[in-house]
Image 1: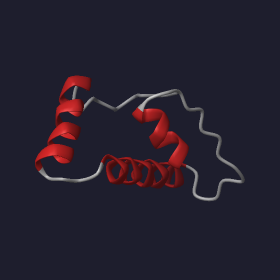
Image 2: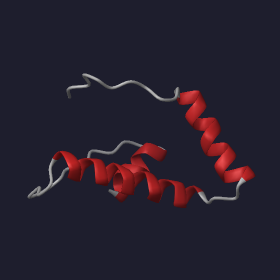
Image 3: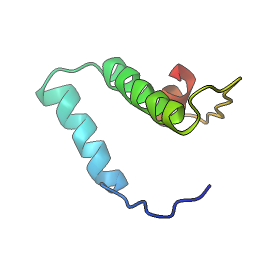
Image 4: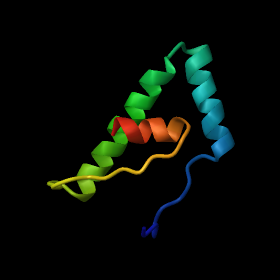
Length: 71
């Protein structure tokens, strides 16, 4: 995957803290966060490939796997 021109916005630790804050402090369910992440990722895929015949997403365990499953 070509990552030219990309940069990390947050570290893994910062992302975990943002998730914790959203869930505990703002009462946003984790499932809602996962759904929003999946929707945003799918939008990025469609920008790169506007009319795909198929998309294959490989998922591991954990929350990122859940995001991928929802895509």
